[in-house]
Amino acid sequence: MRRFIIAFFIVFTLVLMVFYFRNKSVNGAEAGTAAPQTISPESNSSIEVDLNAALNNSDTALVSLIPLVPGERLFQTQGVDFNGDGYDDQINAIHREGQPNIIILIGIYDPGQNVYVRAEEIDTGIANEQSFSFSCMDIIGEHRNSLVYSGLTANADYLMQVFLGSGNAANFRLGLIGNFRTNGTFFIQQVDRYDAYESSNISGTSYPIWVYSSNTASPNSLDQIQTMFDWDVRMGRYVQVRQTRVAGQRSAAAEIARIQDGTVDTLAAYLEGIWVQNTPADSLDRSVFIDYNAREIVFMSGGIQEIYTWSRSVLRRNGIYISMVNASIANLQRQFDVSLTGVNEIIVRVQDDVHMNITENSLWDGAYRKLAQISELSGTKGLAAVEGILADLTGGQTWTASDGAKIRFDGYTYGADNGVLSGTGGLDTGRFSLFPLDGIVVIQFRPESAARYFDPAYIITGGTESTGRPYFTLEPVTLRLTGWVKTEKPVLRLDPAGI
Image 1: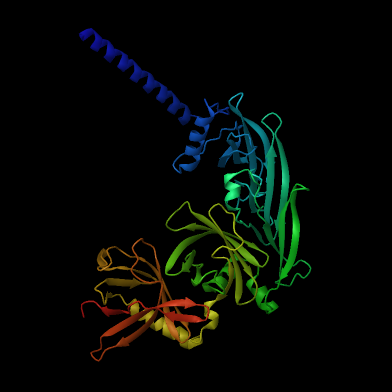
Image 2 (image 1 turned 90 degrees about the horizontal axis):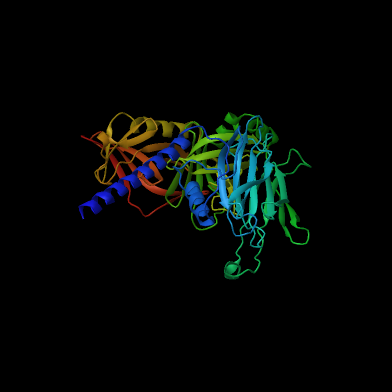
């Protein structure tokens, strides 16, 4: 029995040593300089597990199952069955040394050799990595994945191309079925295919592609041309279905020329402030607050705020394209496309974090008017009212709210006094802004923390008691295109702490 136990421990120790040195050699190979190689997984099931884990884990470095050559750098990848053989292939976006444009590599899995074959590559014509994205989806409704990529070209035009792939690794063929370029924008309209498409091999409705472009026949016009393309089975590509002209508002040409002087600063200064959606898609009021100095863009709807950092921007005809990063989630990005349709109105289109619109009208898309344009309290009177409240509010003292919370205002930031904001269960910090609107002054809060104490907007009024004690009242309101509407939430009163 003793010999058996000793033999067992010897065998167990040897097994541990084998696993240790095996892992060490693998880790050492990863830590060293990566040489071009073909990765040969043991089975197709292991391919799915390993590839999906690499793509879905943000903490995992990107892995190319396609052999790369020196001078190629991988920055985006996706695993998908692209040729319809039931095996996941891999599509990579790379930068190649000495070439400005992004290259898409298509690797087709060869089950016979258990390797990924470098089948095709596409020179996208796009150099801007921030604006570039690609995705695979069945947009033609035939249970076949199409490759769709888009981005900004060197002359600030939008480019989108759609490809279909067929054949195995030895005779793979790539076909261009959609080629779109515009100085406006475009999006893919997702339509309902119902349960029959999902549960059987019945073809579904194709997804139309909408392209917006400027009216090149009238260079000084703000009109847009709306063109719809759809899948044509007989021709095997997307063809134009209809085209309409979307009239822009008439505006002073000199004012538009001043706004579009070719610099980001001038256009960004014009966009500063609150823009309210003309006709929301539902009953919720939507607005966008743009603060170029703070490099912030805040989306507001139904008491909810999404704060984004203004990352990069590119001017284009009649507008600007802005890359944004979520202030709370660093890997959540959006693309903000603004087009001028008049001195007081803009058209907004927001693309999600994969840089591609999949609906004809997202919740944020639409026409917006600047809230300051309908303000009755303006000029010297409005400026004096705002500056007076700001000076009193940020005078260096702590304010006690009617529920016992203690807040300090400093510059255009607010926060809890001594790190404690009582009555909220958390610490609320952030930025605020003041502006005149319809004879009153509005204070708007943009929290930077998870704890939220203030509503998005209030009417703020100041006063002085007979004892000389100052105070402020904050009455919650909802901002709308036509002004503001009071809510049923309680009014807050701010009194100097310790007085």
